[in-house]
Length: 214
Image 1 (tube, one colour):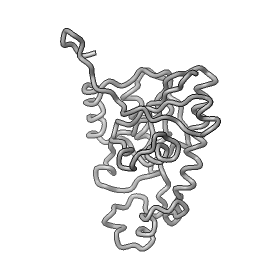
Image 2 (cartoon, one colour):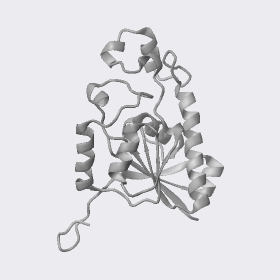
Image 3 (spheres, rainbow, N blue to C red):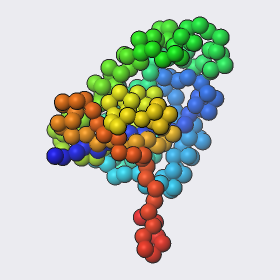
Image 4 (tube, rainbow, N blue to C red):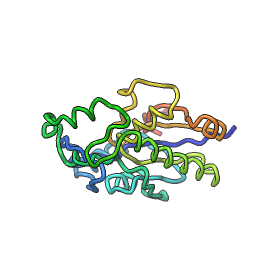
C-alpha cells in the first residue's frame, strides 16, 4: 500500500524567540540570526527534495520555506498557524509568572485557554483539519513526499495526538529549522486518524566511499 511522507519542520528563529516572548498570531519575520542558522543547517544537513511545501501563512514560516525549499511550490494553510495566546501574546514568562490565569493554563488542561486566546482542544481540532486536507490533497494528486513548515506548538501537539508510536512529550520537541518525518497510508488515516513517526528531519549527510558528502 502506498505511503505518503511529510517532513514536518519548525520555522527558523525570530527576535521574539531569542527574547523568550510568546508569539502566536503575531506576524514577525525571521531574525538575522535565524536566517543565518537555517543557511548553516543546509550546509550541515540534507533536507529532502519534496513535491510541495504546505506552510503556516505567517512570515517566519513562509520565509523558512523560501530558504529551505526555494524552488518548490508553496501552499499556505491557515489552520497551521500557531496557538492564539490571547492576552499572553508578546509577553515573557517572567512577565506572566505571577498571574493565576497563566499558572492555570500551564497545568495543561485541554479546555483551558489564555484570556481571549485559544485552548489546546481548539488548536487540536484545526490541526486535524489542516492535516486531513493536506493528506487528502497529496493522495488525490499522487504527491508522495511533501514538506510542512509550521510552529513548535503545532508540531508537538500533532505528533502527540495523531502520531504512533507514542513518545514522551520532550522527545517530540522540534528545534528551529528541524522536525520529523511522518508517513501515512490511506487505510491508516481514514480508519484510525493516525500516522507513523519515522524519525528526525533533516538528515545527517552521508559520505560516499571516496569521502565525498552526498
